[in-house]
Length: 249
Image 1: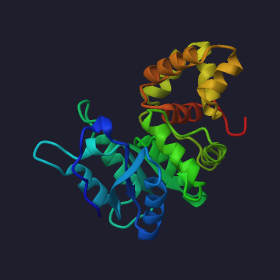
Image 2: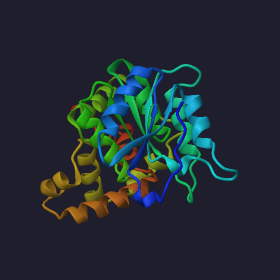
Image 3: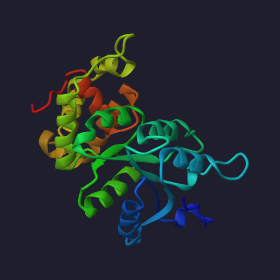
């Protein structure tokens, strides 16, 4: 596992990425691609979820390393601690003064059962491990901007495949606050959420609804606030779980 370098002014730094995968060759390949970009740099590597959680919790007394990593690329199946458990621990450790890094889960079609749970745990998106390098780089930048990775066609297919093989099940104690809040959305907000669930970007939603992109951003912000979710991916999960959107529709 590598250590975090002594940082300069954070505003002068490129997007700082952590790689969590038990295969060293995979990490080396990702590092080579990421470090080739002037606006991206790998600052931490870990071979399993437990190492990643420990590394992000370390630092000087009273100060964790959370603030020194912007985006985590997280594998799912690893020894000691899997990516799902690590994602939940990392996203839960953030505070208002020191937000947790955003997590992108790396998966394959045969690991679908883990993806929805990872997003519920706070992941900001997911990618297929064999995605083209430019798609991975774009996902890192997208997540760092505060958005979530749901737009690429491969991700849309994966999400629809996921909710097809994993029918939504409400918790034993009934609907979550986010499920109940769907009823509070306006008709236009529901329209926007449905288009979000179909993988449409803000620009595309604006074109579909004949409104300005800034207006779409306002609607998206209100949707996230009403549902009490952190980003578009979690909003889309709620849309599928409440049957507002159905796979293949």
